[in-house]
Image 1 (tube, rainbow over the protein chains, first blue to last red):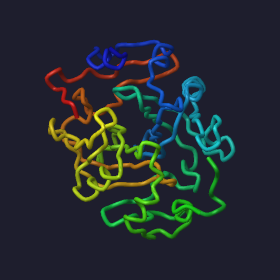
Image 2 (cartoon, chains in turn yellow, red):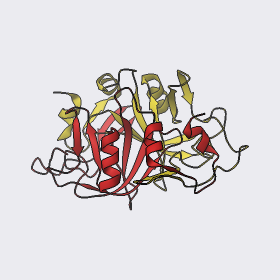
Image 3 (cartoon, chains in turn brown, blue):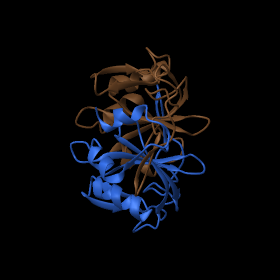
Image 4 (cartoon, chains in turn green, blue):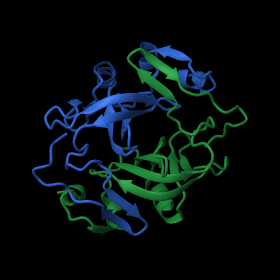
Length: 143
Length: 143
């Protein structure tokens, strides 16, 4: 029985040490886990990114979101160049351990286009609509 | 230039037909896209699941969340057996088209353990804590 199954009906307050958790995480074939970033006070979902073990450890210890950039194949300290950093408020794992939810305090826009959230397209049965324009080209920042 | 790059600085209200969007989505190697489900009124993040093209098309046309079950390798009409269905309020795509945000009205608990959300573990530099107990074994339902 996996750690996740053991914990499904555990009492509230049950704890497990970080090393055991990191060893038990079902990292995908690329060694990554999906991480949702949510603005802690408004509840706005800001972005979906990915973390490897090093990124997750750094995020938990530093208190600032650090992802794994799949395009650049390196640690991505969110906002290191743009200043659009994410201070970690709390981190949560889902029932089968394959997704993270980070509640963060976002500095500036989360999206590389400068928008507050990356989810600026609306989709329905007819197609896509761009919901809001980017603040400006100058406002854009690569992460 | 990809559709997503074309749309980064498009005017608000710019539209694209669904077929073009579905053809342009960067489906992963398994033909899937990640989908975050969020309770539309409270903002609570409920779960992260996956959709293939058929699941996404069904969700948009039926107005009820349908995912792709990676474990069962079949369409997963959320709540078909448990009654814990998700009525779609709105769907959103992110800036590079590789993640969906579904704002839903959740019937019952989103989690198979019966909890409202799958994200019931808190994680910090010391380890994991189970935040809340499952309602009951009887309350559990497989999706």
